[in-house]
Image 1 (tube, helix red, strand yellow):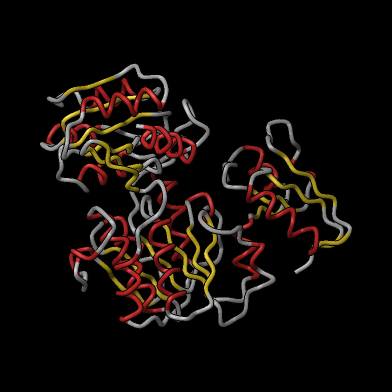
Image 2: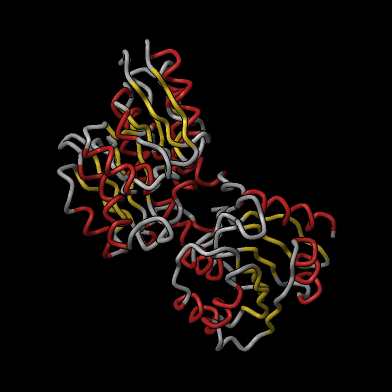
Amino acid sequence: MRFIDKKIAILGSGEEGRDVLDWLKTNSHGCRIKVFDKIKTANLAGFDIVFRSPGFYRYSPMIIKAEKAGVVISSATKLFFDLCPSKIIGVTGTKGKGTTTTLIYEILKSSGKKTYLAGNIGKPMLKLLSKLKASDWVCLELSSFQLHDLTSSPHIAVVLNVTSEHLDVHKDAKEYRLAKTNIVRHQKTSDYAVVNADYKTTKKLAGLTPAKIHWFSRKRLNLDITRVRLRGEHNLENIAAAMTAAELAGATHEDIIKTVYRFKGLEHRLERVKTVDGVTFYNDSFSTTPETAMAAIKSFSEPMTLILGGSDKGSDYRQLGKVIARSKHLTNLILIGKMAGKIRAAARNFPGKIVTGLKDMETIVKAAGQISFPGSVVVLSPACASFDMFLNYKDRGEQFKFWVKKL
């Protein structure tokens, strides 16, 4: 596909925006292209096509106004689905997307299939197009922002879990869940939907696809769990999903099991950092929702010091507060950032020690080490975004690891 003599706007100069711009340089002719980091003063109605990056809300007044004026609203994800010659395995869910997508990729790679990893994790999508063949596989981690206006669905769509997230961007939980439905809504009868059988919301999504449905559950895993390196029951869900999807893509049972047993997981997802004086530190900085922090709490039986807090994402912390209060192995809480007060209020029945007022990661890590004892764990699982104190979740996790290794 080539764009000829079009006026094109790219919303966002981040990784996805640059991916679109680079692709257009070799796949357009005579086009006038403008990149916007903000659209408050932009007249998008004057363009033929607008490529939206995930950070730009699909239903913002400016984008809706442009769409009503006849402007085509697209995205890197939408364009990739239109042009990709390979079979796509798409993975979505409120938590576990990155782990599951990567595990599927590792299994298919170990089984000898030419496989690529892209989306929210891995390489930008459009850069892959020139390499792809019909016999290849592409594993995509797909967020609600990427799924928002998708009009195609993957050959194998994996639905992990759908709770409530990104309510700071989405209008409400209903809109967030509706965005997720696009991963199955446009499938064909020759496609497959791999759906979590343990959640009511995912079961509802199964009713929206004409594809063949394959259910998975952490309760029906056919492997030796003691040999799995990933911690936590939530990771058993991710493994079950990956095993099901990989089998549908043609991987043998032997390749699947072998890869699952050696898979260590991803950086910043319950990543073991170091043991200092008998205290083991885990970096779960990718945890930006109450659900992921609850999963982290349930992943351990050892006495735990939990580091929580950060900037607001519109999350509801009441259920997290209840889990904190009834978790007998949870001995200490360190609450940081803007949401410290809100989390403290939700966890008001917590009987253990609560530390607040720490302003930087060096102090946080030192305090965690001081109040923990041999045989216990310290877990950074913030349940919040990072932008009040750190550049992003990666910066938060890197700083945590840096100061832990200094202990």
